[in-house]
Length: 473
Ligand code: UDP
Image 1 (cartoon, protein in one colour):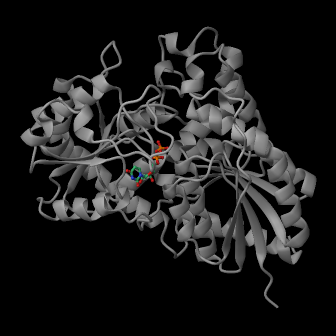
Image 2 (cartoon, helix red, strand yellow; image 1 turned 120 degrees about the vertical axis):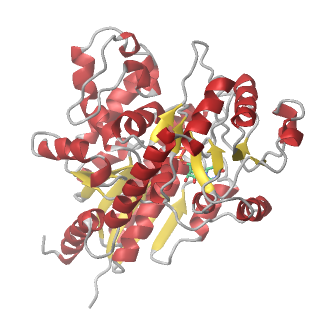
Image 3 (cartoon, helix red, strand yellow; image 1 turned 30 degrees about the horizontal axis):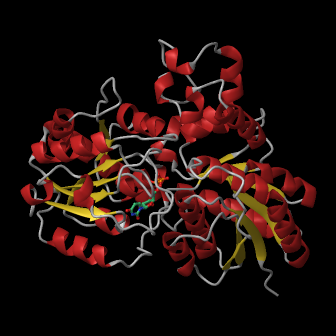
C-alpha cells in the first residue's frame, strides 16, 4: 500500500514570501507525488486578489487553510506594513500550534517547514517529535548574516552604518554597514532586537532550505555547509524556484504583451519595484526624467508615492498615473514607453524577447526571475535585505549596474539616464548580458529533473521524509 507522507508548511502574510514557499511546495509535490503538503496561512484582513490567485492554481496534493484574521483594531491606523506582519505572526502562534497538532493527529505528518520570518514555529516540531525546517526565501548571504549576527553584535561596537571598513562574514562578499538590512541600521531599535532573537531560533532548525542554487553563491553555501555539525544547521540550496506561469489575468497584461510584440529584441527596459514597493514623489519625477533622458524604450509598472515606500494592498486602488508624473511625460514618451498602473504579469514580461534589461528593487523573487530569463539588471534597492542583494549582483556576480544615490537619498535623472544607456546599449551592458546568460544556463541546470544540484538536494530531503513516514529512518 502506498503511504502518503505529509508535510506542513507555515507561511507569513507577505505576498513575495507566500509566492516563494508555494512554489517550493509545488516543486516538492511535482517531483514526489506521494507527498501531500498542507499550507497554514496566518492572515490579517482578507487576502487580496493577487494572494488569492496564488492559491487557485495549486495541484490537488497541496491543501491550504487560512487562519482566522487577526484583530488589529488596537494598532494605530497608519502602522507600518512590516509591523502588521510581525503582530499577525505573534498573535497567530496559538492558532498555528493548534492547526499543527490537529494535522499531526490526523495524518502522517513528518515535518514542518516554516517561513524564515516565523521561526517561533520551530519548537513546535520538537514538541510533536517531528522534524522542523526553515524555508529561507532569500540569499545564502543573508542567511549567513542572520546566523553570524549575534557574533557581530558581540564583536562590533557602534552603529554598523558608521564603520569605515566593510564587514566580513565567512564565505560572503565584504559588505558595507550601510548596505546591511533595515533592522541593522539602528542597533537601539526594537527591529534590531527582534532580528537577533529570530536569528537565534534558526539554530533550532533541523535544516534550512535556501531558495538559491549552488553556482550562484558557491562560496557562501560551501562556507555554511562546512560549519554543519558545529552548531549551524544543515543548509540546503533548492532553488531557483520562481513561478513560471502568470496567475493573474488582467486586461493590462494583454496590452503589455501586445505592445512588447511590436518592439525590437532586447530593446525595452522593464521597471518595477516588487509586489508593493513604491517611490517618493521626488524620486518618481527623477525616474521619469531619467527614462526620458536615456532615449531608450521602457515598460514601467507605476504606483502612487506613499510615506512608507510600500503599498500593502495593491488590488484595491485605481489612481490615474498621470497625476504623479511630470507634466506631459506620457505624451512625450508615447510609443517609446508604456506605463502600467500598479501591477503587471512580471514573469510573462521578463520572458518576452523584447525585454533587454530590468530596473529592479532587488527583491529576491524578482532577482531570481531575472536570472531564470537571463535579463541584465539595474539594481535599485529600496528596503529589507535588498541592498545586500544589490551587492551580490554588482560586486559579486557582476550581472547588474547599481544606480548611485545622492546625499539626499535620491537617484538623479542624469545618473538614471546614464545607467540605462550603459545597460541597454553600452559596452558594460554587453559584459553583463554575457554573464547573465551564463547564470541563466546554470539556473536551468540546477533544476533539471535528472538529478542536478538543487533537484538532487530536494530529492534527498524528500526521501528522508518518506522513510520517516514508513518508519525506516
Ligand atoms: N510581481 C508581479 N507583478 C508586479 C509586481 C511584482 O508579478 O507588478 C511579482 C514578481 O514577479 C515577484 C513578486 O511579485 O514574484 C515580488 O517579489 P520580490 O521578492 O521581488 O519583491 P517584494 O514584493 O518582496 O518586494
